[in-house]
Each structure stands twice: as C-alpha cells, then as structure tokens.
Amino acid sequence: MPWSNRKNSELLERARRVIPGGMYGHESTALLPSDFPQFFSRASGARIWDVDGNEYIDYMSAYGPNLFGYGNADVEAAARRQAELGDTLTGPSSVMVDLAEAMVSMISHADWVMFCKNGSDATSMAMTTARAYSKRRKILVASGAYHGSQPWCTPNRTGIVDEDRSHVITYRYDDIESLEAAVRAADGDLAGIFATPFKHEVFADQLLPSEAFAKAVRRICDAADVPLIVDDVRAGFRLARDSSWSTLGVKPDISCWGKAIANGHPISAMVGAQRFNAAARSIFCTGSFWFSAVPMAAAVETLRLIRETDYLEQTVALGTRLREGLDELAAAHGFSLRQTGPAQMPQILFHDDPDMRLGYAWSANALKHGVYFHPYHNMFMNAAMTVADVDLTLKASERAFSELKAHRTRIPANENPLVLARLKRAQ
Image 1 (tube, rainbow, N blue to C red):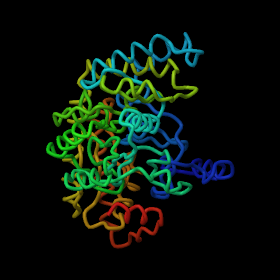
Image 2 (image 1 turned 180 degrees about the vertical axis):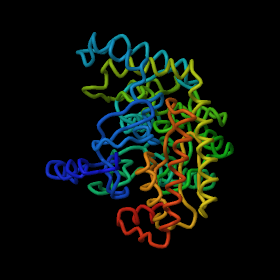
Image 3 (image 1 turned 45 degrees about the vertical axis):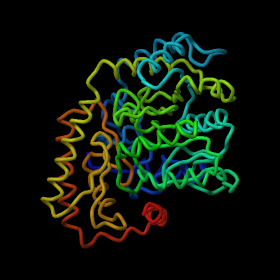
C-alpha cells in the first residue's frame, strides 16, 4: 500500500494537547525529517510498523535495547514464566541473584552488581560510588559525551543551575594531553574518570579510541586511586561478550550497562571490582520498580544467548555487508559517505553536507521505501537481521540515492534551528 503518515500526524496533534511538545527526550521527532513517524504499533524480529501500517527494516533497534530481535521467543518465554509467578513484589525474586551471578561471571572486571532501570540511573550511581570511595568531588567526562539525562550530565542545560555541574570537568576524547590537563584542573580533588567505549556522539563521526589512550586513563586512575568508569550502556555486549574496553586490554573498575542486557525489557546495571564494594554498599539508591523480576528473568535469558550464540559475529558480518554495499551505491550515484565506528553500530553521514540536507533527504527517501535509517544518531544491528534483510535494505537505498541524485539541486537548506544548533555544538 502507498506510504502514509495520516494517523501519525493525528496522534501527534492529540499528543501536543496533553504532552509538552507532543513528545520529549530522545523519542521526540523535533530533530528528524518532518515525515518520520513518532508512533509505532508493533514490532517483530528486525521490523517495526508505524501506526499507519508502514513496515520498516529497523536499524535503530529501539535505540539499542533490541539485540536479538523484537519479541525474541526465548527471552519472551522466560519473561512470561516469571510474570506468572510475580513481577514487582514486596521484595525481589531469587532471579535477582541468578542474574547477578551471570553478569559477574561474564564481565571480567566484575565482582558485584547493582540493578536499576535506566542508563542515567547506572551512571549516577557510579558517580556517587566514586565519590563515596575517594571522598573527593571532581568527575572527569569527555566533552560531548552522553551519560544520561540527570542534571550533572544532561546535554540540555535548560533548568540546570551551574552548581549541578560545578564539579564536572571535561577533556577531549582520545586525547591524552587533554585528559592530563583535566586531571591537573581537578587539583587533588579527583574522584573518578568516565569514558565511553568509543566516541559515539550525535551529528558527528564516531571514533574508536587508541589503546594508548585507554591505558593512559587506566594509569591515571591507578595513580590517583580513583575508579575508571566505562559507560557501556549504549555499546555493552555489542562490541564484545565482556566489557567493551576488554578489546583494548583495559579493565575498568566500574562499568554501567543497560539497553541490550534484557533485549528490550527495562533494566540497567552498575558492576564493579571488589575494591569498590564497600563504597557501593554505603550509598543509598533505589526505585519502586528497580527490583521487578520479569526484566531480570529476561536478562538472564538474554545473557545465555550472548554466551551461547554467534550473535556478535553475525551482527559484525551484516554490518560490514551493509557498509560496503552503501559505499558502492553512494559512489555509483555521485555521493560520498562517512561511515564510522563499529560496523554493527553504524553511523552514516555524507561528505560535503555541512547542514545535513543530503543526509536528511536520503534517510527520508529510504523511509518511504521501507528502511528506517537515522540521519544523525548511530544505529544498531540486531541478531534477527538476515542477509536478505540487508540486501533488501540495499535495494531500497539504491532507490533513495537515485531520488537524491535526481533532486539534488532542489533540496532545500536544512533550516531546523534545533538541528543547526546541534551541528554547531558537534563541530
């Protein structure tokens, strides 16, 4: 049937009457091309359907939580079994201990784990634990890095006062000199250093860190007796079956997890080394739904699939096939792509596209041919995808490139003020 967004537009209008802006946070479509759907009706495997019935091969994977495919039969069966017994109870189910044992056994630096709901929960717990351990205040983060939506780390400063960020110092990612300067700026008050597995900001190329940088962070933390905290919420179990920096030969002291660890069920975690156990035990952190059993049961099964399947190798192979195919198609139509970062977490931008008008027009074209690409955020392959899905994606992408070429001189400038502001910030 022909592509339509009538129902989505009607829902968005209704939402604006009862929800500020009609949507908020990363689910808002304010930064996306105008035709992108905001509301979806269902999902299965590697596909989603919007409320108008349009079907897409989904390269966002729910912004990362979908690792083994929407509605994975094994994970959902485990969740249903636990739901029949109980979910949010007066106390946790024994499955909490099962999950903790599984995570500690799989993550080489982990001796303990605490569970929560969102990535912001986990990173805020890690920051608090670092301060409890060190009895110091200053936290180092890479400039532009996303560690959640709490006042100390949100990228949007509206409603935030200077005091919320007064003890956060930034450094340039993968820049040892900048990191050392930030340590000096802490002036003996350093409490901990945050790092992402790789540089994965929006509106920008992704950057894999050097081994020298990772080892420098490790060395500095050891010398100062403060924790190295790797924020693995976005990339956890997508680069390795261990913490992401294990590929660089570096063990963090504390790491933060979420998104993919329960294949879409709401749970996140902070894990750490024994040296920081007492500090973690000393802080107070909780939530009404943090101990819910159904997500924990889903996570136990997800971790089994991570251990026992070739999902990682499969997503790398499919991501590489997609990347190579898109490069060939772009060149054939007179375009040049910037595809950066791990192939299983693709970021697709265009060369010579300072206001992203080409990228926005191309992703909007692909959408109408059944492929959900994101124009400025890194994407996520999932293990339900197949070679056939990637080949269908490339066929749709060829049509999108052809349309882009035909209308290139008539594509209007990107005048979305939010987009232009983010582009300026990313430069």
